[in-house]
Length: 143
Image: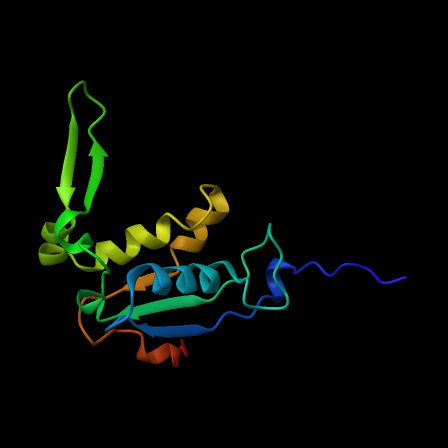
């Protein structure tokens, strides 16, 4: 009889992976990033243990959007007060903080639990081509 393998928190090996968002479609890129953050690409995947890798995303400002999303998509937020809803166009966020578009898309694909919040902290997004994580010797992702 074989037993089911469960990863232990101390024996998890985490790697650093770089994703280049240039000319990548936003949703397809972010679903791949979410898979790597959760660790579902590894054979040691255990749902209740964080076995995912660290992810660095560069060139977030050059991500591609299909259809008319660049002009028509809006993000909703609420202050908590009556009448406090705000609709922010994607075009505005892309000009001021392009890294937030990738962060919000990945956040929507991660579970809304303590473990999901812990996994989301391993995501590092940068608008330009450079990043300060060269000391971790990150590997380039193959899409």
